[in-house]
Amino acid sequence: MPLRLFNTLSGKIEEFRPLADNQVRMYACGPTVYDYGHIGNFRTFIAVDVLRRFLRQSGYQVRHVMNITDVDDKIIRNSARDGVSVRQYTAKYEKAFLEDTETLNIERPQLVRATDHIQHMAQFIASLEKKGFAYRAEDGSYYFRIAKFPDYGKLSKKDFAGMEDGARVDVDEYDKDNARDFALWKAPKPGEAFWETPIGRGRPGWHIECSVMSMGELGETFDLHAGGEDLIFPHHENEIAQSEAMTGKPFVHFWFHARFLLVEGEKMSKSLGNFFTPRDLVLKGHKPSSIRYLLASVPYRNQLNFTFSGLKQAAESVERLRTFTLRLTTERFPEGSGESMSDLAKETIERMRAGLQDDLNTAQAQGAIFEMVRKANAAADAGQMRKDDVAPLLCAVEKFDEIFAVLKDDDQPKIQRVLDWAEMEGKLKEASQEVIAAANTQQLSDAKVEKKISEMEQARRARNFKHSDAIRAELNAAGIVVEITKDGARWRRK
Ligand code: AMP
Ligand code: ZN
Image (tube, rainbow, N blue to C red; front, side, top):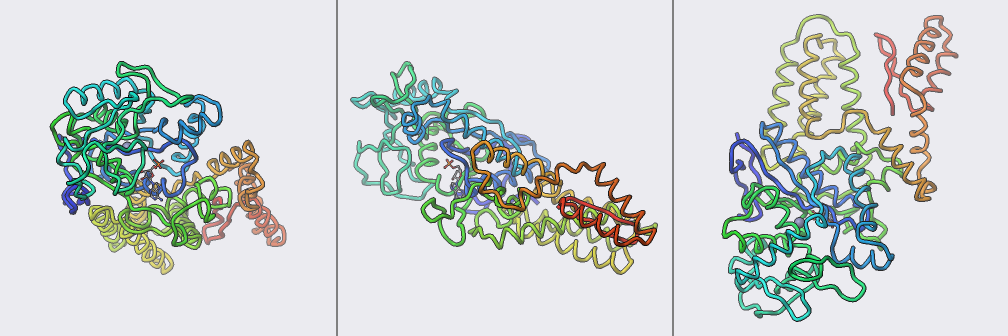
């Protein structure tokens, strides 16, 4: 069965198939690097990452391009305010964005920077002007003439007929009632950064950047274009107008939009004090894997309300899966196989797949794996698990983690990196005690832990429980959980 996805352009769920061969060409609007990314941004980026991983798991090759918006109204304003160049201003946030995506196990797309393509944008605008879709204003700015493009509004489903011809808007972001000729190119105001180009001095508008870079990398028509729901209008509507006016061909087959994230039931805003970046959360003691798990847990078109209790539950879910994997890989089971476990694993893989094929129903996929864990644990507790059952169960867990990417126990170095950053920025006082303690566990290498564990086991064998308990407590304080099983002790980091 093919993947079924909601397409904002048709307003329906459709079967997704690439336009050519086995390769999916997709473009996602990336961050505007004027500040740190917040968890709302990362909800959208994780939704796209889940899509990308699932397409690959389904056998497609994925060519995934993402832009870095390193020039726009806010960037121009802030860099002028700070008296630095645009590149100097954005470099810090671009680096932070790349680190955050790594922290959240988001696979890195091919990245394209707006400021590396200014000349292409100027050429594109010159061609639009030749075709009659763009015009130059008195101050040297260029605008797109939306009255020349009758399909304007087809993505946002808004009827713009009767709109005043020639009315203009020159800010990058504006609301639905403000459909006017939009800026393709902005002439510099005194003191503002600009580029020299054949169409004059200035800088591109935000929308032109994505049309030029997406078609430049992926061709005039490609498979899928993604972003958060706020981008439907005006950004994506304007991209369609610019691109289709230029080529006369359909620009994009599927439009994929993730619903906005709420925090504790409200829109995120600095004034409400509910504005969180992944860094803030890691500093408060939350693991990167819990954040990723939570952000992926609600299907991308449903409302996701981020709460701290949800984050705690996400952490517990990840721990349960990690403990289950540890159990399967360390416990000694009798030879042979119990039929029902491999069937259970197979069914689980099918249920996860069916969920994800249904417009990326991540909740169903998570539900399926937990049902498997519950049944398999019960079987193991009842002594019914056999040696040959382990591989198929682990295979189901592996398939799950190819999409959700939360099980490899790689939180520690990421936490350490956030702490290093906090120290540099003078924010270490915001770090919770837990996170500092967790970072200290780094200092205990695997070899040292193993040594302590064998010392502990020796003490136990000698029935010196006082000593073995003391070692266990010491390890626990260093963030190492020790579990005693009939096959001996096994351990993991908290
Ligand atoms: P920006 O850096 O503002 O250009 O946004 C980068 C991406 O994050 C875009 O795809 C936005 O649509 C998306 N985005 C911004 N805020 C939220 C939010 N609260 N929930 C989900 N996605 C968001
Ligand atoms: Zn874009």
